[in-house]
Amino acid sequence: MVVSYTDCVKLLAFSLFVVAASGFYRNMPLVPFDEGYTHLFGNDNLVVHRDGKSVHLSLDERTGSGFVSHDLYLHGFFSASIKLPADYTAGVVVAFYMSNGDIFEKNHDEIDFEFLGNIRGKDWRIQTNVYGNGSTNIGREERYNLWFDPSDGFHQYSILWTDSQIIFYVDSIPIREFKRTASMGGDFPSKPMSLYATIWDGSDWATNGGKYRVNYKYAPYVTEFSDFILHGCAVDPIEQSSSRCDTTTQGSEESIPTGVSPMQRIKMDNFRTKHMTYSYCYDQIRYKVPPSECVINPLESQRLKVYDPVTFGGSRHRHGKRHHRSRVNRSEANAI
Image (cartoon, rainbow, N blue to C red):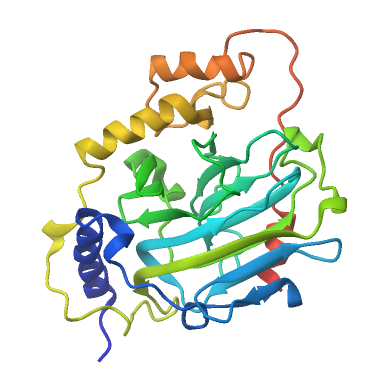
């Protein structure tokens, strides 16, 4: 039986409500690597462990590596446990993200978790980003420090994507809530996407705008992935229909998630207060007027000035140009 596109969305909406109400991934089925993903690039730099449930990706002088989901998904809950490389990792980028750039080259959508390496003694940083309909000229990046060492063990990183919001989680704690607004138009991701994971050389931008590059003396850089969750509606991008939705799930449109719970919001606010170091909404060099979806919080604005008083409006002294991420490596990875 083929489930219609509309029914798929309704059924998925209910199941996402169940996800949100039940502690996220704890009650979700884990997907063996070969059932959910396939090799993207990197030849032998991708190794599936014997149990079939985990994989490691490595970056060396020859190449990075990556994998991609078998299916395209329209909305869902997507998650993996990730352990990042240790020691000197400047210029190294590990990405866990959704994209349809291989299908919609000029108007693609994207939802990103990017992990940016650092020099010895400095912590990894997380960057989240959202693109819709090819709106790469409006980067919606946020960057954060973490309260743990992500190279010391596995931690769960998750994306909840519905037709009205995107929520990023670290170990079940929401760190960012991105809501769709009417003024955004097509800038909110709305087309089916695949899920990707990659490790690659981001020397030109990833650490202090390219000041510190990948040092292959410390290669190979190895990142590990396990506990895969692909809980979404697998959609044929041409037919806009699916036979993969769970037709036994009962629910209605009223079951669509309402967002972050009060307790989760407290945790999210605490995280952002302590660990967020950059938000595009407050970048006065990049945007003279904040993008339309931005809601300016004066306290948040003041906190960010501590990290970069020029970018966030605290000084008029000369400031070096902010380096934007080149998408060449990502595009090459998707094309292989």
